[in-house]
Image 1 (cartoon, rainbow, N blue to C red):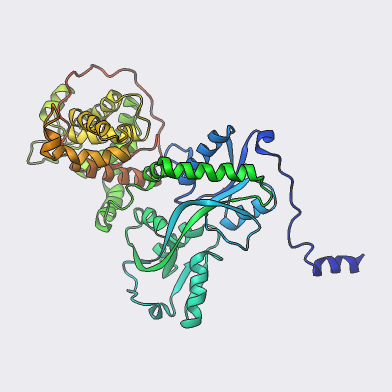
Image 2: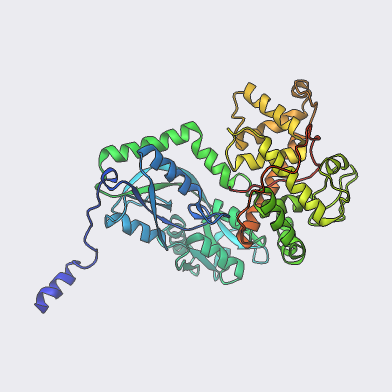
Length: 473
């Protein structure tokens, strides 16, 4: 018996777990997907619900197949691939790069990947690979940059690779920020997302490695299902679905520079505590995420209740005199009155938009209207329709809004020329501030208080502000 066991071990009989037999997704009534939490593919959203670039695409795939998607969370990309190889799930999606060595069937490409070497602004400048000698470089084992660095080691002995523990590129970038690693080889997109939480990060050197992610299917996946998934991805690219999902999560990530992020993170600690309860109260009262209200307030005044601009807008939410009067606000410099009034105005703007505009686009358009006025926003939506753009999509609207400053387009508008480009910049900044707040501040379920105290006919042309941000709702 012992001899038989030794022979089995020698032949590799225990190297791989026996493959399970997974029912067809139609018989099972669900599509089982292995995924890993990271800054790009799958994460917990501000409302506590799962979201993410690949999460949203897979939910759409499930709708296309006519079944719900059951996500099974794994600590590493390798673990998601093992789940596919063992037949425990139908497919894996975790920012995976096709690898011929894995016993899986790869789908067509999902999104492009461009790798960079992430360092700290206080770290050494890197001009060529010889300057990497002696530095600790974090990398995912078996990844494209890992293979490139292994090749580099033959040319430049002394390069030190440190492999991720369980968190993948997000973990490696965090370790660079903490000083535990000198550099991390990562997807540029992961860096851009994480840089909004760690403004000290920078691209130390591009790695000139480009590839694309894909989904890993079980090796015995029926040709019909594999073909359907490839067709779904082809349609998702052609129809703009992938672009829209990408815009939702990443369209704003490179809007803030290091200084602005650093200042915001500092003020979260020093200024926000004085007003947090007021933002939460306003969110509950007007059915908004309090962090969205706080993001707008920060963009407008940096949470300074005495802020005043040369145009006459004042206070925490930078309300015009006319808007404040319509809202019944007597003292724009009173933090409570300003926050409640600004939140109510933002809620009214959002409610005024057609039901056909989904979230989070609806909230971003409300933020843009907060800056440029609802009349200008609606005029821009009409221009979008005339240009065969999607007037219900913030992705398309942020490309159209700057046009209302041009005389040829402004002539079509009842409200005249508008600073649409400024509204876009504001909204994109608010999206960033909101995203950062959602990471560091707990949410609070908004409670609708019923209709506003009074309906304000003919809302004025908008509150003058400078930035933008978005709430996933």
